[in-house]
Length: 401
Ligand code: C5P
Image (cartoon, rainbow, N blue to C red):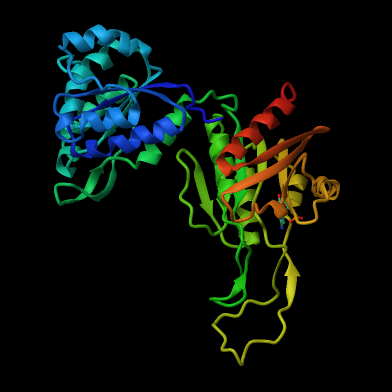
């Protein structure tokens, strides 16, 4: 289940041009299952239509602090108390200044003062305004009050300039909320995840790889972070961006992946290693330093075995506390796959049935084997599957960490 499901989010919208993006933000939050209420600053409606917000949220947005009709429906103090979290997105330079001063003269300002819920601020403004010492001092002040700042990004701005000040990507804002509001049963845990394919070079342009997209491994890293773990994602080549709050180490070959994992193991005590990467079992015996023409290519490719990362980490004196390995099976022979993963040192086995089309696709179905229990997880989006898988793992481990 999405950690945002059922969470009460009060979206405050400030007078910044980026306010035109908020109907889409509302759509994303609702898709995650959040309950929404919306309140606008006096100038926000110059940039986004309240009717559009009403249409996508199914709620009448609040527009004024001093409207008898609006206060009668739900007064601003009740609204402030209703919320599990306040998300002020976008918040302008003027909005930040008012909040830093504790001014309650507009609706967002009054609600922020009257609420004890966590406050997330997503500023959006011109670069010079963002960099101005007054704005930076206001941000420091607000951070000291406990607000979480969702930093703006760099890029082209509505004013025609290029620089820092763009509202953070909407998906990333939602992900920050998710990470912050989810329960954190794995707080204090270190989790290592391998993901994606590996690339085993033959010459500078040719090599061996496989169809893995990395999506399942990235989703597992995200789901572990949502549970409060500190996550390192060692990733083979993929087109995916790194989920919020996760440290990513990018590698190419199986041997590089092993070294990256061992480096982490040397300095950190790992609670859980999730080996999701589709690591190439073999690599070309010799790597050619320049691209070979068709005629010069040897007619046969000599292969040598790659190290097995799961087995190497299992034998390491600083072995991760738990190891979860994956097997992609095309025969549907679960028992054989589980035995194989246990033989290489995994504590738990997750079996994908490739006949259901997991690799490279949007959905996946997995059977998890954990301490004698078998959990069959139906085909579903890879992130939902990752959350369900870690939930079952947790249930199975309950009391034994
Ligand atoms: O033997 P097979 O490749 O099916 O095993 C898959 C599991 O082993 C996965 O968890 C994968 O990440 C891991 N593996 C590994 N190092 C390899 C090959 C596979 O860690 N060289």
